[in-house]
Length: 135
Image (cartoon, rainbow, N blue to C red; front, top):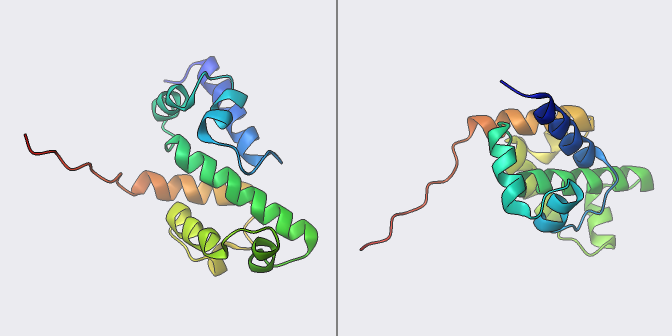
């Protein structure tokens, strides 16, 4: 059961993901903006709340910033990425990783629906397992 504090934290996380924040934040910077001392504390809180790891949340934020900026400038994401020195393939791969869909299938999806798609996909996708080291 979620406490009122958990609910506030969830709202804070999603407001930050949807905000026009800095798309090149590190995981630690992202965590500190949310009031955590580092990414590890945020990661534990995210897992407790049933959210994906911080890395996935940060990728989602970055991708939404790129989509929003490209839309504002009236450019395709491909031309926007080239103009700003980003690899367009990163956008396509990240979209596929986060949502399970190709870019062409989700490029017109509103941000909140994009987040729902991402959360649904990441909850269904098992986390990669670490290999055990030989003793």
